[in-house]
Length: 400
Image: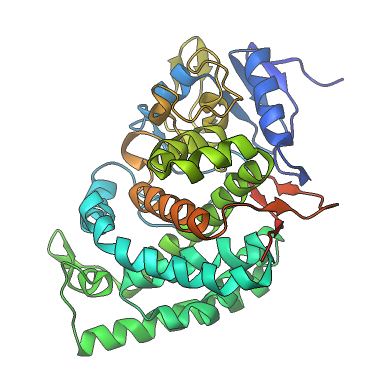
Protein backbone atom coordinates (compact mmCIF):
# COMPACT_ATOMS: atom_id res chain seq x y z
CA UNK A 1 0.00 0.00 0.00
CA UNK A 2 1.42 3.44 -0.90
CA UNK A 3 1.49 6.24 1.68
CA UNK A 4 -1.30 8.81 1.45
CA UNK A 5 0.60 11.45 3.44
CA UNK A 6 4.25 12.39 3.96
CA UNK A 7 4.85 14.25 7.24
CA UNK A 8 1.16 15.16 7.11
CA UNK A 9 1.30 16.43 3.51
CA UNK A 10 -0.96 14.65 0.96
CA UNK A 11 1.01 12.51 -1.53
CA UNK A 12 0.74 12.51 -5.32
CA UNK A 13 2.42 10.08 -7.72
CA UNK A 14 2.14 12.18 -10.92
CA UNK A 15 5.10 11.58 -13.26
CA UNK A 16 6.05 14.76 -15.15
CA UNK A 17 8.94 13.29 -17.14
CA UNK A 18 7.22 11.25 -19.85
CA UNK A 19 6.47 11.99 -23.49
CA UNK A 20 2.73 12.67 -23.91
CA UNK A 21 0.28 14.12 -26.43
CA UNK A 22 0.62 17.94 -26.59
CA UNK A 23 -0.80 19.91 -23.61
CA UNK A 24 -1.15 16.85 -21.36
CA UNK A 25 1.41 18.16 -18.87
CA UNK A 26 -0.56 21.40 -18.40
CA UNK A 27 -3.68 19.33 -17.60
CA UNK A 28 -1.74 17.23 -15.04
CA UNK A 29 -0.31 20.40 -13.46
CA UNK A 30 -3.78 21.96 -13.16
CA UNK A 31 -5.20 18.79 -11.59
CA UNK A 32 -2.48 18.60 -8.91
CA UNK A 33 -2.78 22.32 -8.10
CA UNK A 34 -6.54 22.13 -7.61
CA UNK A 35 -6.37 18.90 -5.61
CA UNK A 36 -4.47 20.39 -2.64
CA UNK A 37 -2.55 23.57 -1.86
CA UNK A 38 0.64 21.55 -1.17
CA UNK A 39 1.50 18.01 -2.24
CA UNK A 40 4.45 15.69 -1.72
CA UNK A 41 5.34 13.97 -5.00
CA UNK A 42 6.97 10.53 -4.64
CA UNK A 43 7.62 9.90 -8.36
CA UNK A 44 11.40 10.45 -7.96
CA UNK A 45 13.91 8.81 -5.62
CA UNK A 46 14.11 11.82 -3.29
CA UNK A 47 10.56 13.08 -3.76
CA UNK A 48 9.67 16.76 -3.53
CA UNK A 49 7.24 19.20 -1.93
CA UNK A 50 5.11 20.95 -4.56
CA UNK A 51 4.36 24.67 -4.28
CA UNK A 52 1.61 25.11 -6.86
CA UNK A 53 -0.43 28.25 -6.36
CA UNK A 54 0.71 31.67 -7.52
CA UNK A 55 1.20 33.31 -4.13
CA UNK A 56 3.04 30.29 -2.69
CA UNK A 57 5.36 29.93 -5.70
CA UNK A 58 6.11 33.65 -5.67
CA UNK A 59 6.87 33.48 -1.92
CA UNK A 60 8.99 30.36 -2.48
CA UNK A 61 11.28 32.21 -4.90
CA UNK A 62 11.96 34.73 -2.10
CA UNK A 63 13.21 31.95 0.24
CA UNK A 64 16.55 32.00 -1.59
CA UNK A 65 18.69 32.26 1.53
CA UNK A 66 17.54 28.86 2.81
CA UNK A 67 16.30 27.24 -0.43
CA UNK A 68 19.26 27.15 -2.78
CA UNK A 69 19.99 25.95 -6.31
CA UNK A 70 21.92 22.98 -4.90
CA UNK A 71 18.87 21.41 -6.61
CA UNK A 72 17.89 23.21 -9.83
CA UNK A 73 15.19 20.77 -10.97
CA UNK A 74 12.89 18.91 -8.59
CA UNK A 75 12.59 16.19 -11.24
CA UNK A 76 16.37 15.71 -11.61
CA UNK A 77 17.90 16.64 -8.26
CA UNK A 78 21.39 15.32 -9.12
CA UNK A 79 23.25 18.40 -10.35
CA UNK A 80 23.98 17.07 -13.84
CA UNK A 81 25.89 19.42 -16.14
CA UNK A 82 27.53 22.23 -14.09
CA UNK A 83 25.90 25.61 -14.85
CA UNK A 84 27.08 29.15 -14.09
CA UNK A 85 25.79 31.42 -12.62
CA UNK A 86 22.85 29.12 -11.67
CA UNK A 87 24.90 26.84 -9.38
CA UNK A 88 26.02 29.79 -7.25
CA UNK A 89 24.03 31.38 -4.44
CA UNK A 90 24.25 34.50 -2.31
CA UNK A 91 27.17 36.92 -2.84
CA UNK A 92 29.02 34.60 -5.26
CA UNK A 93 25.97 34.48 -7.51
CA UNK A 94 25.48 38.27 -7.44
CA UNK A 95 29.12 38.96 -8.35
CA UNK A 96 29.04 36.73 -11.43
CA UNK A 97 25.59 38.02 -12.49
CA UNK A 98 27.00 41.55 -12.35
CA UNK A 99 29.61 40.63 -15.00
CA UNK A 100 26.98 39.10 -17.31
CA UNK A 101 24.08 41.51 -16.72
CA UNK A 102 25.29 44.20 -19.11
CA UNK A 103 24.94 41.82 -22.09
CA UNK A 104 21.36 40.92 -21.22
CA UNK A 105 20.07 44.31 -20.07
CA UNK A 106 17.32 45.92 -22.19
CA UNK A 107 19.77 48.39 -23.80
CA UNK A 108 22.17 45.60 -24.86
CA UNK A 109 19.30 43.54 -26.25
CA UNK A 110 18.05 46.55 -28.27
CA UNK A 111 21.50 46.75 -29.89
CA UNK A 112 20.96 43.20 -31.16
CA UNK A 113 17.57 43.98 -32.71
CA UNK A 114 18.75 44.97 -36.23
CA UNK A 115 20.79 41.77 -36.54
CA UNK A 116 17.99 39.69 -34.97
CA UNK A 117 15.55 41.10 -37.52
CA UNK A 118 17.88 40.64 -40.51
CA UNK A 119 18.69 37.02 -39.61
CA UNK A 120 15.03 36.24 -39.00
CA UNK A 121 14.03 37.62 -42.43
CA UNK A 122 16.79 35.59 -44.15
CA UNK A 123 15.61 32.33 -42.56
CA UNK A 124 11.93 33.00 -43.38
CA UNK A 125 12.72 33.95 -46.99
CA UNK A 126 14.68 30.71 -47.34
CA UNK A 127 11.66 28.66 -46.18
CA UNK A 128 8.83 30.67 -47.76
CA UNK A 129 9.05 29.31 -51.36
CA UNK A 130 9.00 25.70 -50.07
CA UNK A 131 5.41 25.97 -48.81
CA UNK A 132 6.10 23.77 -45.79
CA UNK A 133 8.67 23.01 -43.10
CA UNK A 134 9.20 21.24 -39.83
CA UNK A 135 9.03 24.51 -37.92
CA UNK A 136 10.79 23.11 -34.83
CA UNK A 137 13.83 21.74 -36.69
CA UNK A 138 14.09 24.13 -39.64
CA UNK A 139 13.39 27.46 -37.96
CA UNK A 140 12.72 27.46 -34.20
CA UNK A 141 16.17 26.10 -33.24
CA UNK A 142 18.20 27.66 -36.08
CA UNK A 143 17.16 31.21 -35.23
CA UNK A 144 18.23 31.31 -31.54
CA UNK A 145 21.46 29.45 -32.40
CA UNK A 146 22.48 32.20 -34.82
CA UNK A 147 21.59 34.90 -32.30
CA UNK A 148 23.53 33.12 -29.56
CA UNK A 149 26.69 33.31 -31.71
CA UNK A 150 25.97 36.97 -32.50
CA UNK A 151 25.55 37.73 -28.79
CA UNK A 152 29.01 36.27 -28.15
CA UNK A 153 30.45 38.23 -31.08
CA UNK A 154 31.17 35.00 -33.02
CA UNK A 155 30.44 34.42 -36.74
CA UNK A 156 26.77 33.67 -37.43
CA UNK A 157 28.04 31.64 -40.42
CA UNK A 158 29.18 29.01 -37.86
CA UNK A 159 25.52 28.44 -36.95
CA UNK A 160 24.99 25.26 -38.94
CA UNK A 161 28.01 23.44 -37.49
CA UNK A 162 27.33 24.74 -33.98
CA UNK A 163 23.69 23.66 -34.20
CA UNK A 164 24.76 20.10 -35.07
CA UNK A 165 26.92 19.88 -31.94
CA UNK A 166 24.39 21.51 -29.60
CA UNK A 167 21.54 19.30 -30.89
CA UNK A 168 23.74 16.26 -30.37
CA UNK A 169 24.49 17.32 -26.82
CA UNK A 170 20.82 18.09 -25.98
CA UNK A 171 19.52 14.82 -27.36
CA UNK A 172 22.27 12.73 -25.73
CA UNK A 173 21.73 14.36 -22.32
CA UNK A 174 17.97 13.72 -22.49
CA UNK A 175 18.44 10.16 -23.73
CA UNK A 176 20.86 9.46 -20.85
CA UNK A 177 23.80 8.75 -23.18
CA UNK A 178 26.73 10.36 -21.32
CA UNK A 179 29.42 9.28 -23.80
CA UNK A 180 27.67 10.83 -26.81
CA UNK A 181 26.93 13.98 -24.76
CA UNK A 182 30.61 14.21 -23.73
CA UNK A 183 31.78 13.91 -27.37
CA UNK A 184 29.45 16.73 -28.45
CA UNK A 185 30.45 18.86 -25.47
CA UNK A 186 34.14 18.39 -26.36
CA UNK A 187 33.51 19.87 -29.83
CA UNK A 188 31.64 22.83 -28.36
CA UNK A 189 34.33 23.53 -25.72
CA UNK A 190 37.05 23.36 -28.42
CA UNK A 191 35.06 25.89 -30.46
CA UNK A 192 34.77 28.22 -27.44
CA UNK A 193 38.48 27.77 -26.68
CA UNK A 194 39.44 28.80 -30.22
CA UNK A 195 37.34 31.98 -29.76
CA UNK A 196 39.04 32.66 -26.40
CA UNK A 197 42.49 32.22 -27.96
CA UNK A 198 41.54 34.62 -30.74
CA UNK A 199 40.27 37.27 -28.29
CA UNK A 200 43.36 36.89 -26.12
CA UNK A 201 45.45 37.82 -29.16
CA UNK A 202 42.94 40.35 -30.57
CA UNK A 203 40.77 41.75 -27.77
CA UNK A 204 37.42 43.32 -28.66
CA UNK A 205 35.59 46.04 -26.72
CA UNK A 206 34.65 44.48 -23.36
CA UNK A 207 31.56 46.72 -23.27
CA UNK A 208 30.07 45.01 -26.33
CA UNK A 209 32.13 41.82 -26.84
CA UNK A 210 31.18 39.15 -24.31
CA UNK A 211 34.16 36.85 -24.88
CA UNK A 212 36.57 39.75 -24.25
CA UNK A 213 34.55 40.79 -21.19
CA UNK A 214 34.82 37.30 -19.68
CA UNK A 215 38.59 37.24 -20.29
CA UNK A 216 39.07 40.65 -18.65
CA UNK A 217 36.55 40.22 -15.81
CA UNK A 218 37.70 40.07 -12.20
CA UNK A 219 35.87 38.78 -9.11
CA UNK A 220 37.59 39.89 -5.89
CA UNK A 221 40.62 40.80 -8.06
CA UNK A 222 40.84 37.25 -9.44
CA UNK A 223 40.31 36.50 -13.15
CA UNK A 224 37.78 33.83 -14.11
CA UNK A 225 39.40 30.45 -14.79
CA UNK A 226 39.20 28.93 -18.27
CA UNK A 227 36.90 26.23 -16.86
CA UNK A 228 34.57 28.88 -15.43
CA UNK A 229 34.42 30.72 -18.78
CA UNK A 230 33.74 27.47 -20.66
CA UNK A 231 30.94 26.65 -18.19
CA UNK A 232 29.39 30.12 -18.51
CA UNK A 233 29.36 29.91 -22.32
CA UNK A 234 27.97 26.38 -22.24
CA UNK A 235 25.29 27.47 -19.74
CA UNK A 236 24.17 30.33 -21.98
CA UNK A 237 23.87 27.84 -24.82
CA UNK A 238 21.95 25.22 -22.80
CA UNK A 239 19.67 27.85 -21.24
CA UNK A 240 18.89 29.83 -24.37
CA UNK A 241 18.53 27.56 -27.39
CA UNK A 242 16.19 24.75 -26.34
CA UNK A 243 13.88 27.17 -24.47
CA UNK A 244 13.40 29.52 -27.44
CA UNK A 245 12.78 26.58 -29.77
CA UNK A 246 10.20 25.21 -27.34
CA UNK A 247 8.42 28.54 -26.83
CA UNK A 248 8.15 29.07 -30.60
CA UNK A 249 6.78 25.55 -31.06
CA UNK A 250 3.89 26.13 -28.64
CA UNK A 251 3.21 29.65 -29.94
CA UNK A 252 3.00 28.52 -33.58
CA UNK A 253 0.88 25.48 -32.71
CA UNK A 254 -1.54 27.88 -31.01
CA UNK A 255 -1.60 30.37 -33.89
CA UNK A 256 -1.96 27.63 -36.51
CA UNK A 257 -5.05 26.33 -34.69
CA UNK A 258 -6.61 29.66 -33.59
CA UNK A 259 -7.22 31.70 -36.75
CA UNK A 260 -8.84 34.54 -34.80
CA UNK A 261 -5.72 35.09 -32.65
CA UNK A 262 -3.42 34.92 -35.66
CA UNK A 263 -5.64 37.41 -37.50
CA UNK A 264 -5.41 39.85 -34.58
CA UNK A 265 -1.63 40.10 -34.79
CA UNK A 266 -1.56 40.11 -38.62
CA UNK A 267 -3.98 43.06 -38.67
CA UNK A 268 -2.39 44.89 -35.73
CA UNK A 269 1.31 44.04 -35.21
CA UNK A 270 1.38 46.51 -32.30
CA UNK A 271 -0.39 43.78 -30.27
CA UNK A 272 2.59 41.44 -30.58
CA UNK A 273 4.32 42.63 -27.38
CA UNK A 274 1.15 41.82 -25.38
CA UNK A 275 0.73 38.51 -27.21
CA UNK A 276 4.29 37.48 -26.23
CA UNK A 277 3.55 38.03 -22.51
CA UNK A 278 0.31 36.06 -22.73
CA UNK A 279 2.03 33.21 -24.57
CA UNK A 280 4.78 33.12 -21.92
CA UNK A 281 2.09 32.93 -19.22
CA UNK A 282 -0.04 30.30 -20.98
CA UNK A 283 2.76 28.00 -22.24
CA UNK A 284 5.64 28.08 -19.74
CA UNK A 285 7.88 25.26 -20.95
CA UNK A 286 10.12 25.39 -17.88
CA UNK A 287 7.12 24.44 -15.75
CA UNK A 288 9.07 23.95 -12.50
CA UNK A 289 12.27 25.03 -10.81
CA UNK A 290 13.90 23.04 -8.02
CA UNK A 291 15.43 24.20 -4.75
CA UNK A 292 17.03 22.40 -1.80
CA UNK A 293 16.27 23.31 1.83
CA UNK A 294 19.48 24.07 3.75
CA UNK A 295 18.09 24.04 7.31
CA UNK A 296 14.89 22.87 9.03
CA UNK A 297 12.05 25.37 8.80
CA UNK A 298 8.28 25.76 8.70
CA UNK A 299 6.74 27.25 5.54
CA UNK A 300 2.99 27.96 5.57
CA UNK A 301 2.36 24.90 7.76
CA UNK A 302 4.80 22.60 5.90
CA UNK A 303 7.41 21.09 8.22
CA UNK A 304 10.56 21.12 6.08
CA UNK A 305 13.85 19.38 6.89
CA UNK A 306 17.39 20.07 5.71
CA UNK A 307 17.86 18.32 2.35
CA UNK A 308 14.19 18.44 1.29
CA UNK A 309 13.61 19.14 -2.39
CA UNK A 310 11.15 21.92 -3.30
CA UNK A 311 9.17 22.16 -6.54
CA UNK A 312 8.40 25.74 -7.58
CA UNK A 313 5.35 25.23 -9.79
CA UNK A 314 5.85 27.88 -12.48
CA UNK A 315 3.40 26.25 -14.90
CA UNK A 316 0.80 25.88 -12.15
CA UNK A 317 1.19 29.45 -10.89
CA UNK A 318 0.80 30.84 -14.42
CA UNK A 319 -2.58 29.11 -14.79
CA UNK A 320 -3.80 29.66 -11.23
CA UNK A 321 -7.44 30.88 -11.36
CA UNK A 322 -6.82 32.68 -8.03
CA UNK A 323 -4.46 35.01 -9.93
CA UNK A 324 -5.66 35.00 -13.56
CA UNK A 325 -9.28 34.92 -14.76
CA UNK A 326 -10.00 32.18 -17.34
CA UNK A 327 -6.37 31.06 -16.95
CA UNK A 328 -6.45 28.37 -19.68
CA UNK A 329 -7.61 30.91 -22.28
CA UNK A 330 -5.39 33.11 -24.47
CA UNK A 331 -6.48 36.73 -23.93
CA UNK A 332 -4.26 39.02 -25.96
CA UNK A 333 -4.76 42.15 -23.85
CA UNK A 334 -5.07 40.37 -20.50
CA UNK A 335 -4.55 42.87 -17.64
CA UNK A 336 -1.43 41.98 -15.64
CA UNK A 337 -0.31 39.19 -18.00
CA UNK A 338 3.32 40.24 -17.41
CA UNK A 339 3.00 39.21 -13.76
CA UNK A 340 3.53 35.61 -14.91
CA UNK A 341 6.41 33.61 -13.43
CA UNK A 342 7.66 32.07 -16.70
CA UNK A 343 11.16 33.44 -16.00
CA UNK A 344 11.18 32.36 -12.34
CA UNK A 345 11.69 34.85 -9.52
CA UNK A 346 14.12 36.10 -6.89
CA UNK A 347 17.84 36.57 -7.58
CA UNK A 348 17.99 33.57 -9.96
CA UNK A 349 15.32 35.04 -12.27
CA UNK A 350 16.20 34.22 -15.89
CA UNK A 351 19.19 36.25 -17.08
CA UNK A 352 18.07 36.06 -20.73
CA UNK A 353 14.45 37.15 -20.32
CA UNK A 354 14.80 40.41 -22.30
CA UNK A 355 16.57 38.56 -25.12
CA UNK A 356 13.87 35.86 -25.14
CA UNK A 357 11.14 38.50 -25.42
CA UNK A 358 12.99 40.21 -28.28
CA UNK A 359 13.46 36.94 -30.19
CA UNK A 360 9.78 36.00 -29.88
CA UNK A 361 8.62 39.51 -30.85
CA UNK A 362 10.89 39.70 -33.92
CA UNK A 363 9.80 36.25 -35.15
CA UNK A 364 6.09 37.02 -34.75
CA UNK A 365 6.47 40.35 -36.58
CA UNK A 366 8.60 39.15 -39.48
CA UNK A 367 6.93 35.78 -40.03
CA UNK A 368 3.38 37.16 -40.14
CA UNK A 369 4.42 39.92 -42.51
CA UNK A 370 5.65 37.24 -44.95
CA UNK A 371 3.58 34.12 -44.18
CA UNK A 372 0.34 35.38 -42.60
CA UNK A 373 -1.59 32.12 -43.13
CA UNK A 374 -0.37 28.61 -42.34
CA UNK A 375 -1.71 25.36 -40.94
CA UNK A 376 -0.49 22.16 -39.29
CA UNK A 377 -0.03 19.35 -41.82
CA UNK A 378 -2.99 16.99 -41.86
CA UNK A 379 -2.55 13.86 -39.77
CA UNK A 380 0.37 15.28 -37.74
CA UNK A 381 0.52 13.88 -34.21
CA UNK A 382 2.01 16.45 -31.85
CA UNK A 383 3.79 15.13 -28.77
CA UNK A 384 5.63 16.93 -25.98
CA UNK A 385 8.70 15.86 -24.05
CA UNK A 386 8.34 15.98 -20.26
CA UNK A 387 10.79 17.46 -17.75
CA UNK A 388 11.18 20.65 -19.74
CA UNK A 389 8.51 20.84 -22.40
CA UNK A 390 9.31 20.88 -26.09
CA UNK A 391 7.59 19.60 -29.23
CA UNK A 392 9.51 16.95 -31.13
CA UNK A 393 8.12 18.21 -34.45
CA UNK A 394 5.71 20.80 -35.87
CA UNK A 395 4.98 20.32 -39.59
CA UNK A 396 3.54 23.59 -40.98
CA UNK A 397 2.17 24.24 -44.49
CA UNK A 398 1.20 27.40 -46.37
CA UNK A 399 0.25 28.45 -49.90
CA UNK A 400 3.11 29.61 -52.12
